[in-house]
Amino acid sequence: MPTLEKVMQMQQQGKTDAEISTQLQNEGVPAAEINDSFNQAKIKNAVSPPGAAAPEQAPMEGMQASIMPNQPEPTAQTPPQAQPMTQELPARLDAAAQEAQAQQFPQQQAVAPPEVYPPQEGFAPEQPQDDYYQQTPQAYSQQDYYAPQGGTDTETISEIAEQVTTEKLNDYKKKVGDIASFKNNIQDKVNDIDDRLKRIENSIDKLQQAVIGKIGEFGESNAAVHKDLDNLHGTVAKLMNPLIDNYNELKKISK
Image (tube, rainbow, N blue to C red; front, side, top):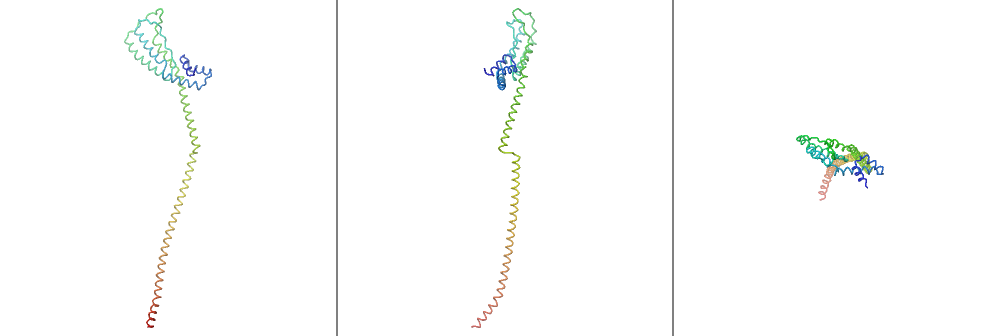
């Protein structure tokens, strides 16, 4: 028989979860499988609770008995057995009991109190309805056991998620490296490139000034050459004029 069916069968027999866990461990069932079976049983009981309709039916039968006290009951009423509850079933049963009480008390105020008859042979005495409301909270005793399990499951999930996140971050650091050192290296390289750009800019400025200076010197040299050419032209003109005059006089004499 699977562990889940064993757990549900023993819960229906009225055994506590501690007794079920001890018995399964004695049979050699692992603790992890026992916890999984408890969780699956809680889910199945929450989806289709086995004893959800019984507490609602008992107050209606008690109300009918209080309204019609003269009719003998063929059999004695047996108190409903407390079924193992999950975390959601106590809230549903409590709401159903409060609704049944709200419907029952106004009717009891309008109806006269029934007379008490001695018990007849072969019939069990009518059980007061207060016994039901005193016994019903006993079905909620299992809630104290399930509450720590929910907290433990939440803590386990949180630890697993934290562990997975840490492993992923470590893998990312191994692939990428230390982010702080990577940032420092990039910053140093950027500063180095900035210094080089500044030196290149200064070199270009100096080269530009040198070119402009050379152009200015070339202009000054050109002006000096032009002046020298003018002086040479004047000197040649002064030398050529007497020669031309002497040539003209010699030409006249030869005629």
